Length: 194
Picture 1 (cartoon, one colour):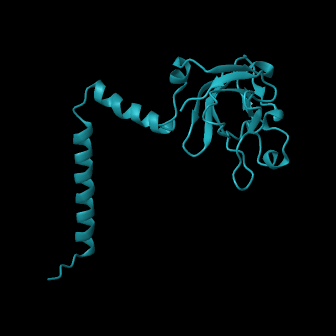
Picture 2 (cartoon, rainbow, N blue to C red):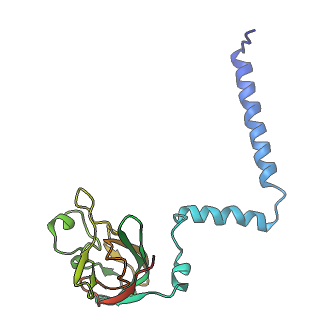
Picture 3 (cartoon, one colour):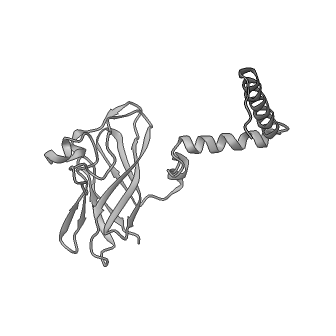
């Protein structure tokens, strides 16, 4: 059995579908007190901010593993250094402009390797130093030479804070403490977890 609709009938069905959809949407959104209205907004803001990334407030409540002071009021707070099963370490934290004026991120933070510099400003100059094992570990690179770290750093406004990360080859399992070094910043000792 075949049913044929005229143009007017088809438009009527579409209009009916739209009206029914609007009525269902209004019914599910309506009847609300203030508490229901706030729930969608909070989840929407979580998805806009990346969802899985910690908020600035969450980052501030953590006790940093180390604080490295840099030039012009820059501050690098390391919040985690986790050993992964893949044989690398991910160091995470926040880069903050602790001053009142905007600061241009120093180009030295990218390091001096041509392969890394050609991919733009980054934390590619960072190293981990295992003084016990007498080894220095550089930021990992992908097959095209891009550093596996936060890139695209240009300017931080006064008080602005950005989440950052760096990935390094993992020192031997017995190594728990390493020094993190980043050009233009003081050095700091961090404890590896995992």
